[in-house]
Length: 453
Ligand SMILES: Nc1ncnc2c1ncn2[C@@H]1O[C@H](COP(=O)(O)OP(=O)(O)OP(=O)(O)O)[C@@H](O)[C@H]1O
Ligand SMILES: [Mg+2]
Image (cartoon, rainbow, N blue to C red; front, side, top):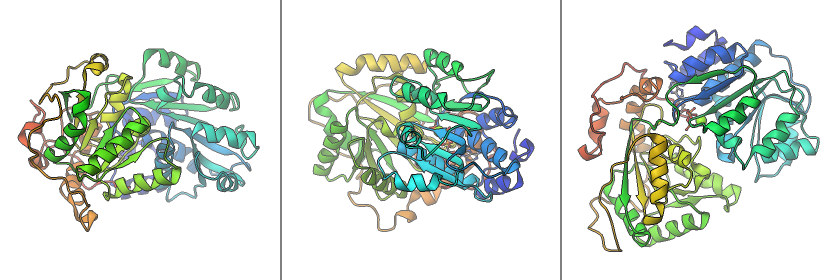
């Protein structure tokens, strides 16, 4: 199906999609919308950046549009859970965007901010509540929220929500939901043992997979640089200077490590900010906003930013440390090359991380090319400078022009689940050596324009 008009979505939803320049449904949207709109349970697996949010948001909004009765007081009709505050906030924004022509009452319930406002927002009941599990449980415990009116439950990043860190909370929440409900689960990865657990919470689910599980996006040029731990700080500066960075997301294993990288970059004259669990929520929000706007171009993060975060113009993901959970690699690098764009993922691998690299390569069924091994602290001269200060008018930079248009053109690439795509003139901005070998130059007949949040 190549148009949103074929799903029977309510007119106000179609209008919002048109305004967002969503012309062609992506593969996961085409596959998931019919069963989800029919009220079936569903488990949907598709590559990062291919529009899973709309795949669950649109059926929920359509149900609310078709049956617009007011929710009960202190209750919600749809409950969407995600693992991080930032992702829940982003999903809530998506509901507001797709539902902007509906009379939609929605709320966001996340930790780290005062609970009072959330309690008040839920007082009259809402159609859609997007939450992180901990805060949701607090709201239920204090009787600010009842869950017996939930018609649809969504677990976004389902494999993460069902792993050891969250499973107890999720079980406690699910126990309070009506048995007769619709449950939708989505992720880009689904380890087998977690799939079994997911199955226990679903009733005769439709299983839709837009691409083989954990296939890494074809449009991400991935490589590894073997290095010593001691050489990593200098290597990062060198990579940031050598690469044509629009926005870079640098992942470290620890919060402390993230702060250390910010300091070492500052010494080298590269401005960066960090986001991790030891920062206050107001700091986290400020840094995310600065990264989204382009004011901060280099963001150092722990895995808190690995899942679901959708920031336009992330051209590079750098794994300063390799993740010990191979699925994390898939999610981390998926912060680039979203919605048909392309991107670069560079991973630093020291001797102690060799096993992590092996496990990642096993999961993605692909060996990562290695380049430019670095040992010790000495390095070659930088080739390109990263501005230590943002340009005066951030909005006048590349994302507003070349890259965004390229994104729009590449939308069909997302629809193809990332099959070789998004060639076209936009690539000329990319140095030849960064181009994916064997990429066919194909200009997909994709919708024009871009959907910016
Ligand atoms: N049909 C569409 N047409 C154009 N753009 C789309 C379409 N569907 C989604 N997008 C855009 O694609 C981007 C990625 O969408 P989304 O965040 O839902 O991906 P995802 O599959 O959930 O990725 P992840 O696995 O990383 O969470 C967003 O910017 C969204 O606005
Ligand atoms: Mg997502």
